[in-house]
Length: 453
Image (cartoon, rainbow, N blue to C red; front, side, top):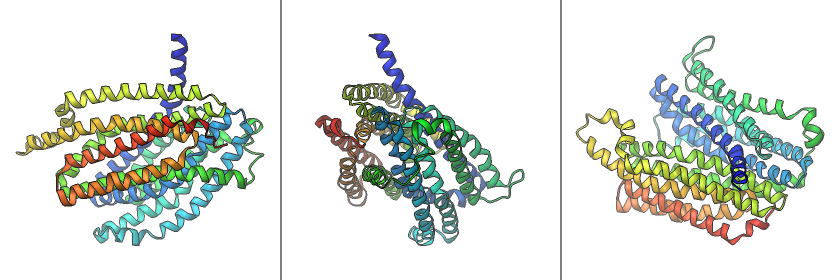
């Protein structure tokens, strides 16, 4: 019995952990990009943040649809229909071609978009430049996400991890060289940062293509011989993938709104909130990685009509994430000053240091509650996505974002003027709402009878 249990957890970890490490590689790539720009020019880093967030918001929709191929491939794998995997991949590539056209069109709207921000003209110029490069190369990124599903949907997530790490190792030196003009490369500043990012996306996509499109994969999966446009399959992918993608896009928008809203409280409050978000990411990355892994395992289980296995993987994910979160929360509750001291050491000489630390400690402990419910929310969302219950996810997310987060947060900041802790309590109530709704939907059991194939 114990050996059987270990084997089942091994299956969960073998699928989910490489996805967590893939996300970590992407995060490191983004972090080094910011560090290089910050050391190059303050205007460049000032422009990179809003332009990067704006691009990410737009790209999220397209990558979300392409990434939902993971569920289709998982269910076809579980159903013993590998020949349907090749057509899925090709529909994803056709969608990425459409995304390329649309994103290129959006890139021409850079000036009016960033004019709305009201930043100084020199910052706007840099924002537009960075935004255009990322948008025009975004279709390559969408294609890479679609190709990655060939592996992740079949539960083979290690190649995804390896390819993303290779992309990271390629991006970091190229990023430095193109920003600063090192070695044989010209000094291009923020434009260089954008080109390096697109270069990494291109390398990642090429690696996936080389690994997928060969005769060995064509016989079982039809990756070469079944490349025709399948109108019915494409529409089904869009019908399920668009709501799932909008859910994540709304989620990103909600947190973007929160960050910009908190910025109205003052520089100290914004700095504290950014520190707390940096710590929150330690919980966020594993939660998202395990959620993606759970979607794959649930999709495969439902594809072979094994609902008990889907429920078992759900329980195991909850046990793993809650064990991890409890350990983190113990640190955050028992040693908050030591944790925050890593970020606030430069403020130690500030007369208001003790007050800042007390304020940050209260926010940190609120965040400790937030990450527990956030991990549970991602778990149940992973189950619902793996089944194909995406329309419900989209609508519940939209309602929650407007009426449980945006409206209350606006009242807290603009009218009640209650400060940063109240903002984080509002954000925590929002994620508790999302958890309760997703858990209720899970308990209903409709997901057990839904299939995307």
